[in-house]
Amino acid sequence: MDHRPLRIVIVDDHEMVRFGLQAMLQRYADRIEVVGDAARREHALQLVEEHRPEIVLSDVRMRGFSGLDLCRELVARAAPPRVVLLSVYDDEQYLYQALNAGASGYLLKRIGGEELVRSLELVAEGETVVDPTLGGRAAGVAARAAVGRSWPGAQHGLTQRESEVLSLMVRGASNQSIAAELVLGQETIKSHVRAIYRKLKVSDRASAVGLALRDKMFA
Image (tube, rainbow, N blue to C red):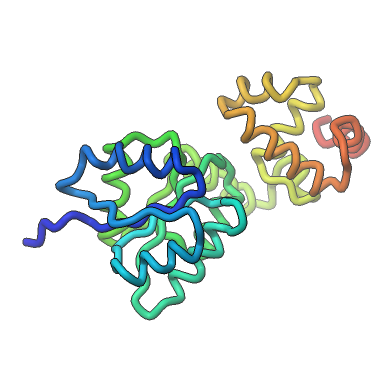
């Protein structure tokens, strides 16, 4: 049997994340070998061409380029690596986009070392891996859609998570309170709020809440 470690390339625009992942995975050197890390698209493509890794572990959103676009570019190759997206975004919309882009996995950055390594091994065996919490929510969304049910704000393009954030905004909760309620980081909440503004075509919190009340989204 071939017991050679899986070779991976890490792509993330934050040096701390790249080094942190390498340090964590070093404990599993008999199973995982990090053959390179990149902060830029061009460097990532160069590393893939040079090392032919089995898996590319990439962030979803980075300065100047998207992990989703990188994924599409990589899986379109003649002998593509598998791509696993590692993100802070606990949102089924990003999961759907990742799978549509051809990713073999969508995991959250709160994942532990052993779970990450096992997930990468499953991907190498041909499985698709999804964070369990997010996967369960996505299954629920699919089930509701199948019977014609949805969530408040879906008609405006809001994801289920964005709807949850907006409902708490309507109740007067601050970003800090929303983060605590949903067990998410404040930067993640800010990202959701910006997406809500964009989709509702408003520019501030009061207008978003006013539109939600006017449309009786949470009546």
